[in-house]
Length: 213
Ligand SMILES: NC(=O)c1ccc[n+]([C@@H]2O[C@H](COP(=O)([O-])OP(=O)(O)OC[C@H]3O[C@@H](n4cnc5c(N)ncnc54)[C@H](OP(=O)(O)O)[C@@H]3O)[C@@H](O)[C@H]2O)c1
Image (cartoon, rainbow, N blue to C red; front, side, top):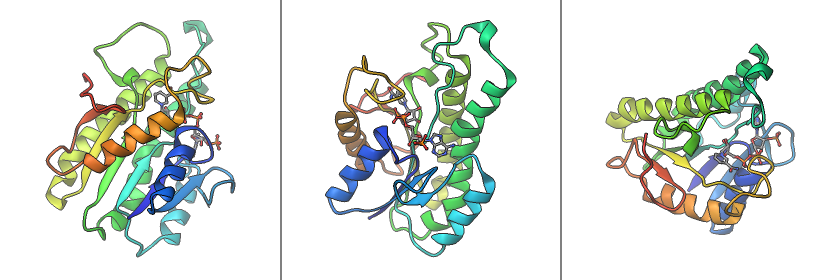
């Protein structure tokens, strides 16, 4: 199986890449620098086009849109600037869509194509504890994109799942996170393996629970 993981330089993405490679999958990990293979800033259309050209004709069985930023973790309402919004949306929303768009020809070459979008429980409208406006909105948009891609790609048999990876001890999640990147990646991979056209459009947690929209 050929898997593409965006944002594989650290955190959950690096762990996904390591675990998938260890079980024998062929993994193309992308990063903004050259640290983990192929260079890709997901928000850069030029780099997306170059990446698509590099892997043209190579089937992709699983695309994991993992790259993300959380710029407003500690921001108060008055701290927000247009730039914080623009950067958050460029990576977490536009970046997800551009990656899917760029790799659709490769997914179409697979016998069992799947797309996994790493969103967050913070995407859910059911939870509204306040704060993190740009991150929450961006993850809600990523969830929405995944749900609608699931509909559009259903006739082609391309399954799309959207996931909450847990509160994970990474640079983003912080040391107080509830689970390790290893636990998160293990659970997520189990979820990706279980994703089928029948379950396409699901919003699941890393440990297999259905998440409220
Ligand atoms: N940790 C949590 O508790 C938690 C909870 C819910 C959801 N998530 C989601 O899970 C995913 C991974 O999070 P994490 O905790 O592993 O975060 P992390 O440790 O901060 O790592 C983020 C990864 O995304 C990459 N990235 C950032 N901007 C990028 C861009 N423009 N183009 C390409 N790659 C980019 C980073 O690359 P560089 O090294 O180049 O910066 C890094 O590899 C994110 O989508 C996050 O929103 C995390």
